[in-house]
Length: 84
Image (cartoon, rainbow, N blue to C red):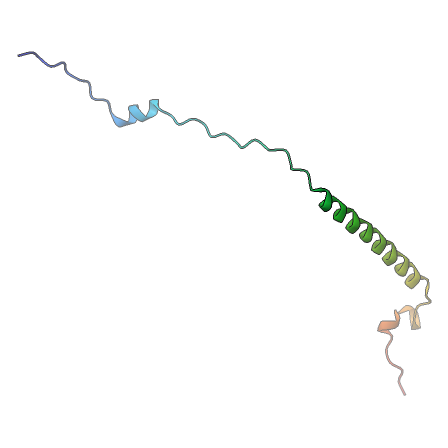
């Protein structure tokens, strides 16, 4: 009978230590898709409306600041009612 060659048993620790998983890769950023022309038009309209509204709010705030204040420097909303 032929003799069998003795195998050296390898522990699981050394077996898995040699086969490390590949390092995880980060996803590469993809370039942003360009918006459709209709969306660009809508964005432009909304930005223009926003500018108009901000200008109107600034104008109204300046107009409110030009008004003479109420009794004793209190705003008209906080003036106590007159006592009889």
